[in-house]
Length: 290
Image 1: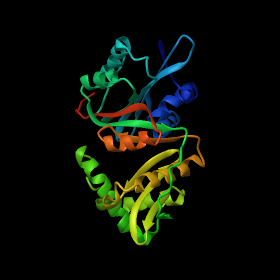
Image 2: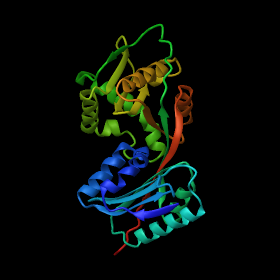
Image 3: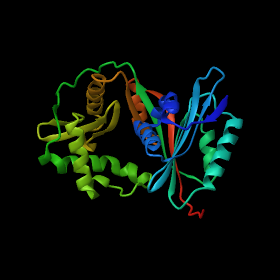
Image 4: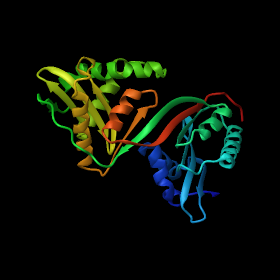
């Protein structure tokens, strides 16, 4: 396995699939970085057959440094970890007072251990899933009413999403813990934007709000069920509708689940999703002088 430095987006395009496994935002951020001259460092790793198996991109933004590191499975070894360690030690020597985030994608945890050893703290760990074949579930005997987002229902959706994500945000110290309640303007804008794309769906039984989901392109952005209606099969039905919605436009469905959320993992794996990678977000906050 060899490596070389990349100086243009056109050269890197062969590594887009690896960046896409981090997120669609990773691809957009790196492309914008090349376009606007914000790339501090970029490397690819490739085999003797010229197949790209790894990519590293460091983008210097106004408020932070963001590094994107992604490898295919089965190529990570001690020699590669040592090389990555040297890259991070050199980069930290050039770091200014901005926060340094690293978005890491891969199956092997060795790289995360190497990065943590250089002074980073792991803030987030999620599992990426993909679904390529969908088997429909039988519908409930009492079908739900499916609607888009309606402004008069904002406070009910605000509470639904807020209550659903509060425990998770608190567990991982994501401030504010109840983002939907404490950031009403931003939450309303998020609902409206998803609805305008046709990617918002709420599910009702009479006047009772059962659950909802939002998607973005081929990804499930969020899916929630009211606590009073969990364990009754509603979640499976709402997930089925969400999958069908995405597969009308895309060949695959992607989603990310917190590594600590074993209940959600079991649900998605039961529905045919398979794990493709682990994603970790690490941050370096020490104030350094150039």
